[in-house]
Length: 112
Length: 116
Image 1 (cartoon, each protein chain N blue to C red):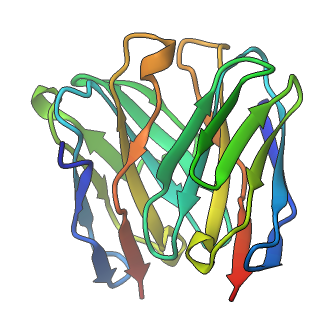
Image 2 (cartoon, one colour):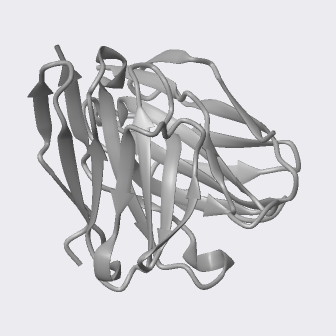
């Protein structure tokens, strides 16, 4: 069964203090790894899709990287508006339906 | 592109009542997904449609749950005889489908259900 483990569960940063969020995964054939941002009471907002080890993608202060066992979401010089829960999800190649499995997320708080 | 929309955004009901939620996917997206999310957890897959065909159902989807996608456009999720354990955020997502690079799922704002 596919598994996604995110760490830490919660992270508190000062504005401008860079850090990384971790997503470790176990999947029988990775079809894609996804990062989403979720604000309280709202649906997840798509950030990145990564397909193969070594791939990197960037958007503003965020950079996502992928290895064969984990993905990192690097946040450079975060601002208070980056406060949210960041969700990682994996899609596997196994079975007739390429199921997407989510982690429980990392709740990020950026303090001014 | 107006994104995925869901209606209603909030629903309060009494235990034993039936409720129905609607999802309108991004136009031209032929895949539609329903998820359930409880506080402090990630979204959990419920069911999936390719056009009008329901192709996969999770074990989480008990007999009280039914989903439809007539004509391959909008979808409805009905919960019969609601229980307090059904209280959650119900999320809908859609994707273009058709290949690895077209399977990113885009989510709607969700419907928050509270069963009293």
